[in-house]
Length: 407
Image 1: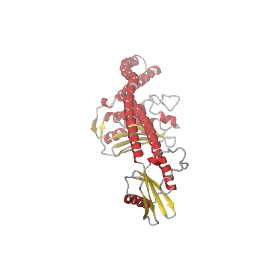
Image 2: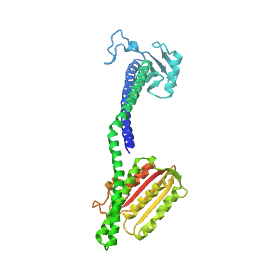
Image 3: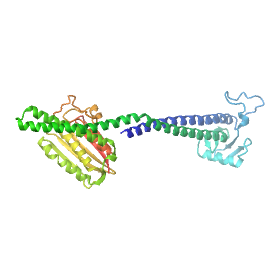
Image 4: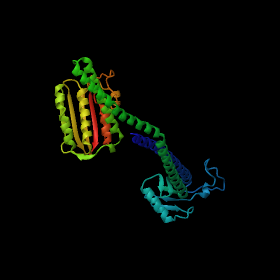
């Protein structure tokens, strides 16, 4: 239990941290990439406005937008191609770039024109299409250096985020183990106390029962002796259940796991409750898929089925129907027990169904003979077999317990 709690806490913390770092890194890189694109588009808008070249700067640079560096016209590397209506090149302007010749520029422009895109990237060149009197002009801007800087920033940010994530993951694992150690020790002491107390209680209970038997031999039976016998048996049953529950919660290693025919175990155990159901005027339906086997503890599975059926029969009204279904589903098997509840079922009942000593009846009437830990024991058995168990109620009156076990 403590180990699962640690794993859940670590998984939740690291998942939240990973999500946060992912959002931060993605946001930073999206902003950086957007800045590269916006700056390129602003430069291209000027070039397309002046037929693919910067205007004459000898008369000043009043045309330069505010915020743009006055060095931009001198630093930019660009070229443009004027195409006719058939996308054939009319004029290539490549004097402001060294890496691209006229033939390559024409090929780039035709490919962009055929894609019918107004703007975008062609390799590391940002382009924009603009209409002119004699045709369409495709203007390209070299963004290679800025894209290289963006990629370096992206790789560095991812590396730093992952490095920080790994460091924090190690710290989280270390501190979680350290902070939960007192809880683990307290939990272990609690389990030891239950086990030790259970053994200590058994001795006086045995003596009490023996004394009652002797008194019955000397005096006539009376309500006081019967009450002592009844309550001592109840206390003995509660003690045995608590000890069993404590052992089940320790770990799967405490169980002797072997391959056994689980279908036969479930079928035989369920059929043994047929007579009990009939005496209470209740109908028990059993549906078990044959030839299923599992690696587990047959005694624990027997107790699991007994707990679920005993609980269903005990808390269903007279004349109702109780059903048990055990079917294989892929790599898992599903055990489902359904009954009609004598009391309305609320969300609070379902949420606390597997809590120790919890009862839907607030009066905690003990006439049924239960202790309120049956479903807790069922949950411990399923967990020991690395399965899952849950309670549902589709209509507020039907109570369904579903346990999923690995095959």
